[in-house]
Length: 233
Ligand SMILES: [Fe+2]
Image (cartoon, rainbow, N blue to C red; front, side):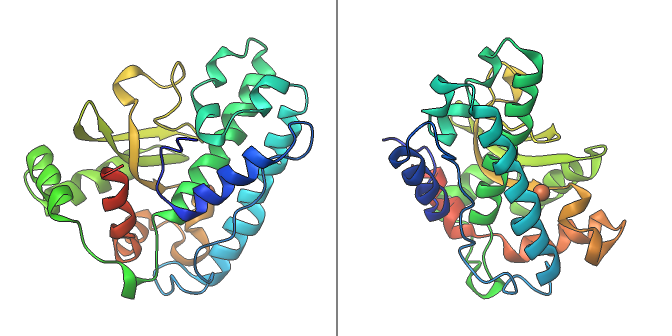
């Protein structure tokens, strides 16, 4: 099965999906690939525990509930599901899959592209070259990414995607993501390489209203080795 993602977290999730009968609770909460306390002080342990154990878990429970009446979609991998949500005609079911299927994918991805600061690594030569070509420099890229994250009004995500072989920064509301063909605009479709959760639940306990400080700190725990691998797969 082609996963389209390189992280162990998502691979584990996808395997569990593939091996589970479509009629049971097929999506399950992936374990964090590090201890919840390992991203501190940049992301505090209480935020991580609630974000992963409560928020992410709730998206999965509601996704499974929505898939209970969708036997065809229930057979899909989490990756493949993102591109099929638009095909659901019933508005309430589509909204449930969009919010919770997106929530599950986005958070699984988010955990996988972070790591303890000591293991953060750096952009590979290939990634650095692509960033320089698209944005001029790493610093300009980070500034543009932070701007997208700051400008996202309310809840949503900032993304670095690869689209037609080039890097691009996008932003989506709520739990939408760049894999949701037919839901996000074509200009925002692509393969995510980085995603930053700017819902208040991602930072409010520690940073309160200081989203800019959260974004600045987050760069310390970006898993560049995972991003490098995503670019190469
Ligand atoms: Fe979140």
